[in-house]
Length: 209
Image 1: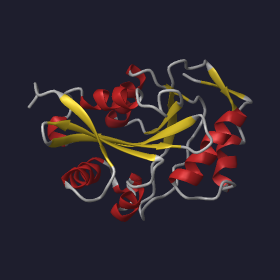
Image 2 (image 1 turned 30 degrees about the horizontal axis):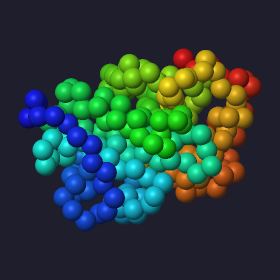
Image 3 (image 1 turned 90 degrees about the vertical axis):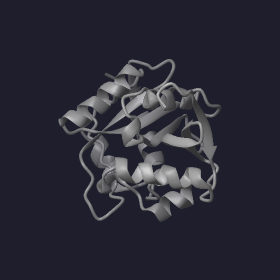
Image 4 (image 1 turned 180 degrees about the horizontal axis):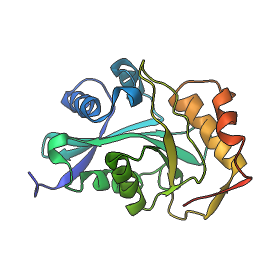
């Protein structure tokens, strides 16, 4: 399987084996505290602003990425990405990321990624993975991930990618991204108090490190 070429296939319906395999990998790879319900995921797949991308080796789904293109925004969110446990460390995650940022509607935007802030070995490896792909972290931002299950989410950071990534962003620009994340990815009010909590102690310009 290692030498079989990878291909990207868009999944746009809950019917069919590809969606079932995406759900299997999604469930095994993400902790309950960061995982939306299967019903919620199922409602997302047919929404036009979402892209469900499956990495295929022949007829097998070996990884996936779920991206949300925000309305009236210069950003999109890499909401979930994972690789099947028996296909990890084979470059599939890198392939998914690099194919995603080539897509129309994504290639000309900022790509945001919510990443665990914990200092565990796994969390640190994830940050290294994104940094190697050209992502940078919003300095000083303690990102509050809204709960999506009964389990409390971990502390998070926000990482950003674009082809021409600046050295800093304005706090007002970051606010627009946070509002889009809360309103469109988590279906929360645009004036959710946690957005102000995240921003209140931050400077007017934030470094991307």
